[in-house]
Image (cartoon, rainbow, N blue to C red; front, side, top):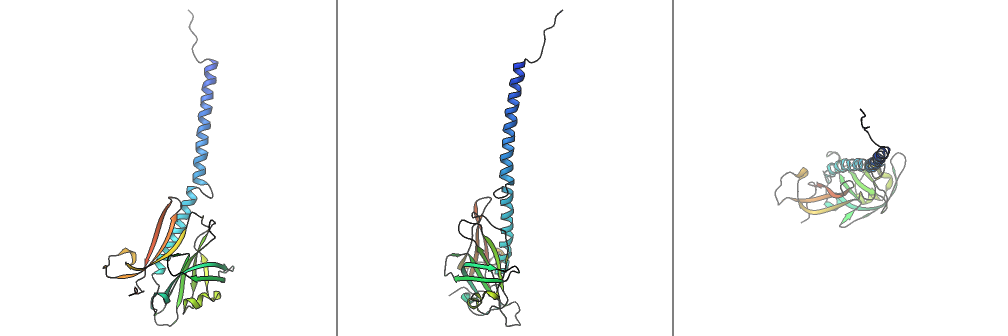
Length: 231
């Protein structure tokens, strides 16, 4: 008794192999695109998340330090905090500032802010701290922390670069990571968003930046309770 042969014909095998090859190529292409979007050294989501985290940590540190503005110092806001437009900042290998070009910004946003305070109330010396974003439009930028331990008058200290030191708080940030500083002169606020009466108004420093990974703007606010709001 003869039995019918069972199995696949040569044509069916060739078609099956072709379909398997097409499916494999599609999966490899999808894997390559996914890996590139996540791990690309410049624009991958992993790199963007790392830059966002680095910048957020830096701005959180600046937010806390800025609340020292005016601590133990006489004079009004203008003597103890200034928004600046810094066009040139050069450092040597040890972080000492060798060139500094800065001009006050009366209102609006700026790329730097400097504040004055007294590190020790029983001493007459003033110190200055600040933060600056340096970089040409459309190019990578770096966020720097500024400090001057002898800073009786902010404008005088800015005219003497050798009094300042600076260090980078971030690595090079892409253009989409925009950062600027702004000042609200009269704002009901309190450090760390604690409740406060509406009649208590203080200057508020805002550090605004664009989140590169999620494409949204965020802000770190410092309520400057050591500085009386202008009448």
